[in-house]
Image 1 (cartoon, rainbow, N blue to C red):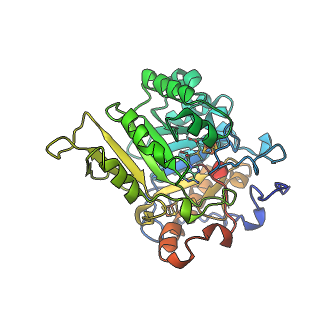
Image 2 (tube, protein in one colour; image 1 turned 135 degrees about the vertical axis):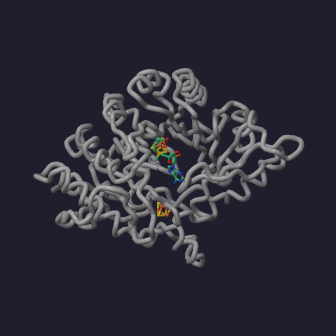
Image 3 (cartoon, rainbow, N blue to C red; image 1 turned 120 degrees about the horizontal axis):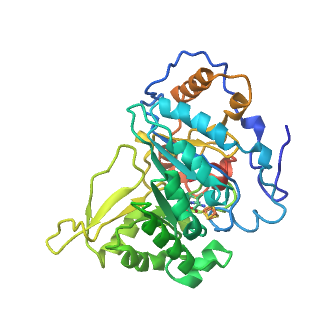
Length: 383
Ligand code: SAM
Ligand code: SF4
Ligand code: SF4
């Protein structure tokens, strides 16, 4: 097995840290799974590529992800059939939502074929999955109809500013806002909704873009979600000083658009929902809502129901985990589907992860979290 090291900083994965799944013992039959903190497994995020055509400084900074960076060779990537086989076992264990991510998922060749295979899966209750995809939007105008035809239900598009110069600087490949907006428009026309837009807020970089983004999407039927800049990975040079807490984001929006808190739409939802209020302080459904994702300032590990499958088939139980469980060795070995289901059950059953909660309880150290342990990159594990 080869180790791939970036000449600059990080290996994509260090298999010395990879836990080989223990021999599947079939003690966990298919059915609803709970981890050690009684959290059900409901949501599977699948990274389909570690490559991206953007170089967002908070995710794949150019200095690290340069021409010398070693991406995964194609043979290391799970095939669509392998992904679907693994996903089927997750669905049998209670997963109801699958999100394709990356890297940039629309860069994976024939991604609509994978969508088609996953769209054929049914939940334990016999219902179609909530099948979605997170994209930077650059290829969406071209692919939206094919994705819809393949069975994708909706998309989340990332966009960090309305101002073209600010956005071009943040994606660091000079990509214009207008093309992302054209992608969103195409997704809307194809019926890939409800559409969400993710904006990562970085203090002093795009905080002045919060209100223009809110103004643009208010009343459009599209839900803007403002995300705290996270200390994920080891290459973005994260500092607490660059985080604009969601509470401050909400306070700023309230100066122009009164908001009312809304109840969570589903258990384990990452975003706190806020509705635009009318003159009498009641939620105006026409104006819509926004969400804030406070991963840094308000831990939501208590009901975290998400598992992440990396591009090469490592199962991660937390965005901040520093090791994965090697499911690819099972799907490429003699393991039966029952063995695979049993291994997944075993791994989830032993899950203890609650990184954000622990970070919150260690405030003294909160400026320095990127230093104490090596973690996987967001582009490898997906958001
Ligand atoms: N390339 C796609 C995109 O940008 O939508 C999908 C993958 S990207 C890793 C998934 C999400 O993670 C995006 O919305 C992105 O903005 C977010 N993200 C990446 N790095 C982040 C960070 N350090 N803090 C908060 N969100 C981050
Ligand atoms: Fe690429 Fe998405 Fe990361 Fe930006 S956030 S570099 S678009 S993977
Ligand atoms: Fe889930 Fe880990 Fe995030 Fe907590 S820190 S909410 S366990 S992904």
